[in-house]
Image (cartoon, rainbow, N blue to C red; front, top):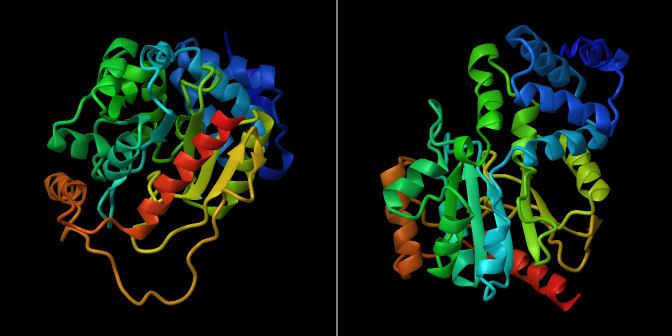
Length: 319
């Protein structure tokens, strides 16, 4: 089935394009993910949305279409009743200049009794991915709910590759390497939470690299009544910048919680945290081990992020 009618609506330029309804967005991305359209139509969709930008309603439709094609992971929650809740860390940017410390955040949350799932690409030709750091650490990579539950029962954070979580989404993300631009799939990937609605406290870390994205992401989180931590990521990763704490905006049931949210660190930095001398996966893994062992100092910003997420889970548990 052609998606030409949808492209005609969204492809009229930034000012002339018309937004899609939830149902239209869900149908459009369902066809794209299921391979029912031509490569030319996929490219047109990606470019049109890149110019127009996504509305919260469109993002909702895109996310629901994607979740319907993800491997079911929610059953793992019931298999590990001791968890205080779940946290999802979408890791899609990797390290370009700074070390990628997403794995450190995941391990620290797991130590606090949180069921942590990191998902992202196995590799990126331009960045050091969390998957590469994870492999260097020898931590569990999961394929389904059973292997995820086993990792959580062992008190470990878990990683799942995007092409395992949702092969169709991985194919859409790979379009970037053909047309040279990111597409709606990259935004959708950062919004996925397989455990939302599983009946237990759950948080997703939603990060952005450009301030303008904060508006559409806020609209989405409000629309779907999400539990989430919205922040500017470290080079697009869901971990706080070790050098300076960013703004943490906590959403519970889609509403910003003033008490749990935190202002960014202001002023001139008087000292820098201890960081590895490079961004290579093995160097980053060694640093993560050192922090977890207490032989290197945990950056205050990451400690604050852990506390913020645990507090948000606790608030949900209290009702």
